[in-house]
Amino acid sequence: MTITFIGHGYVGLVTAAVFADLGNTVWVVGHTKEKIESLKKGIAPFYEPGLGELIQRNIKAERLVFTLDYEAAVGPSEIVFICVGTPSAADGQADLTSVFEAAKSIGKALVGYKVIVTKSTVPPGTNKKVSAIIEKEKPEGASFASASVPEFLREGSAIADTLHPDRVVIGTSSDRAEELLLQLHKPIDGKTVLCNVETAELIKYASNALLSTKISFANAIAFLSERVGADAEKVLDGVGLDKRIGRSFLSPGVGFGGSCFPKDVKALIAIAKEYGYDFHLLKAVDEINKQARKHLVEKIIHHFRGNMKGKKIAVLGLAFKPDTDDMREAPSIGIIEELVRCGATVVAFDPVAMKNAQKILPKSVVFAKDSYGAAEEADAVVVITEWNEFRQLDLVRLAKSLRSRVLFDGRNIYEPTAVKNLGFVYYGVGRM
Ligand SMILES: NC(=O)c1ccc[n+]([C@@H]2O[C@H](COP(=O)([O-])OP(=O)(O)OC[C@H]3O[C@@H](n4cnc5c(N)ncnc54)[C@H](O)[C@@H]3O)[C@@H](O)[C@H]2O)c1
Image 1 (cartoon, rainbow, N blue to C red):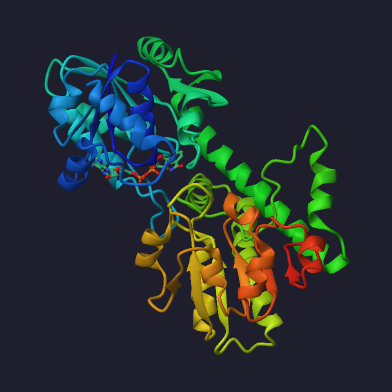
Image 2: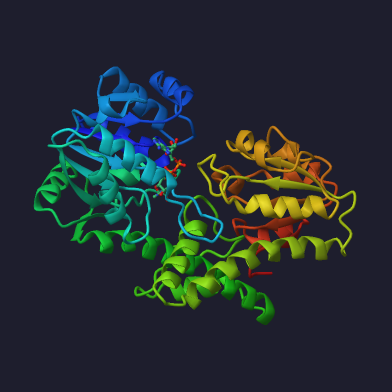
């Protein structure tokens, strides 16, 4: 099949590369000349394990083509996927400017019959607006059906997630579009959910909102565990063993970040409001998430008896999660800003996100070449992102570099007793 992806971010580029690798001819349309030129050379604009190789292989096989030209891409394609960003607007609603711009350009370039699919996360009702724009822009004789196929990939494991998703959701009222989309997704395993467009649109928000709820619930249990003297990890082990509940995403820590959960929780609150429903539960999820970051900073300040002036803090992990260089809404940003504001010096290390972090973090932050370098002469170590390489750090070596052995484990990746036995003062989340 010949297909087009509008947008070459985490979703557009990964999905395009995977479908090209499955034998399709895939066009990727961008709107920045510089990025398209670099993609043509096989350079991915962000870090995602295995992606560079996949792109290069499929460019070479002439199955993956990058362009700025909508007509060149849309013309030969049977299906066009809109994969542009839908960030939070100031009021929490999804900003659909890029989606509507893409729809306009697709409409102008339409010839023959196409299936236009929205893959970006958009509020229920957006596909109808997209269809109206295309209808208005398209030349006479051209026709289309619209569909919603929301994306569930996770950054850091995006290629495997695209090939082996838990489910493929196809929302459309057109039999022809459904048939074409089922045919395209044949090599992709995972259960198929067929539904109307609004259902598909809402499935995506409901999924991200529930995952965020699990994280905030775990953090609320952690806050309580600290007060009652319980071990939150053990509490959640006990809870998660119940098959109706499960343990995944019941992870106490510094809260969720990234380009999806925070914005999708806010957007679902705004969608509910628009339809006259006050989504109290999600407001609390958002609030607890903010508290989780604050809680760690308060612990650090409390340890230093309120005096952060001249304290050197080693921060390990900056990306919003491991295996990505994505800094969008990363908990590290607020935590570091607050430490700096209180007078601390921050020396940070992240395996891949330092280049992106440099553009966002306060100018005074110093970047180290590894964890041990960051810890040199530091008064405390703070782990914010649970990169694998931090799990098995040589803590004896780390301890030798430190001025004082204090470890704030913002992701509960260490065994408290083992760390304390090395002479560290250990602070986890929801455990002593
Ligand atoms: N990142 C994730 O893990 C993830 C997972 C599932 C769903 N989503 C959703 O998918 C959508 C895209 O997310 P992302 O992380 O890939 O975003 P991104 O910010 O990484 O990429 C967006 C892309 O759209 C391009 N773009 C914007 N306007 C354009 C236009 N008019 N024409 C052509 N290209 C245009 C940008 O240049 C960029 O390449 C969002 O709605 C997001 O919520 C993201």
